[in-house]
Image (cartoon, rainbow, N blue to C red; front, side, top):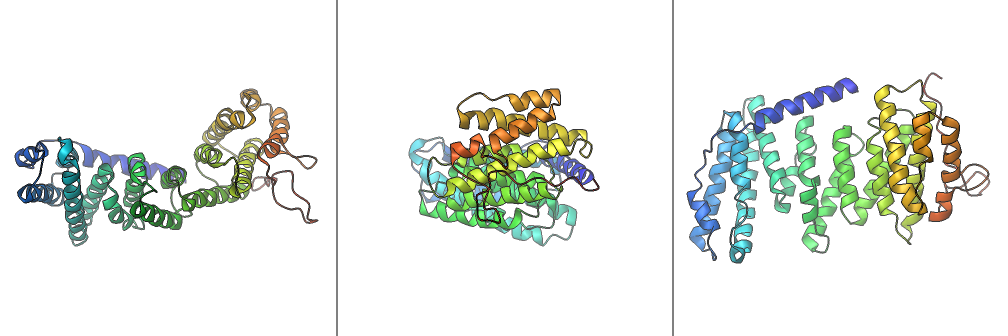
Length: 373
């Protein structure tokens, strides 16, 4: 898997170099700059906005000089808003509608290109443009590319609807954006169990950043998926679990039906991370152990300490001193064992499910030994 990830990163960097190296500006901007400075817009101004976007997007599709693409995108993005507050709404609405129309058509034209290399570069450039615009109107165009066979296209399609600026615009108090947030969540849900760690990291940030029940359920589903991968020793990129644990911790409400469910996932995932660190001493490579160490320490510092309202550093010290006995003792104190619930369970009022006799489990599941041991 490390080789696959290396190939992915090399390809990504290669394409970014091709796509983002800037050169001279090609699209005429005099008229659009004049419109951006007007206080009230009329039909002629709307046509200028539409024509500007049409020309700029056309340049992205037609150019064979891909070292100039970044400049073309910058020209578009830098003129996505009006300089005059009084015309801001008018300008933004027309810009959004024109961008959707012309970018949508450009995607269709790209699919007809006979050169696969040219098609790939055009689609990537259009997706990076959509990503930079952070416009909810364009989300459906990115969503259409989420299932693409090309990993880099999938990455940018997902990035376009999960970047922080876009998430801020998904205001759940507005019906339209709420429906869009739900639609995006459903599409990401279909991807979560089959994408690379790089893309999964984007989905995790979306699930933690969008305040709708479906996104919270997506985060829980991802936590369950990671827990299962720990259990069968197939988990990859352990550092991602530091983010997942922090987001789970943030989602734990003071009260409510979901509180025990979220707290349970947090505790079990953290427990498996600790157990993997101890049991995998001879099974894991240096990079994996370093990532796990970061997960253990960061979660203790930023989550456990907050929940117990007291600075915690026992696990940090145990990691620094390779003291597994102290680490497992602290694991039992925080997360529970067969004899008693842990401090976290008492604080957050959750358990680990039922035992065969119907009693409540007070200990997290035990991580199986590594394969071959």
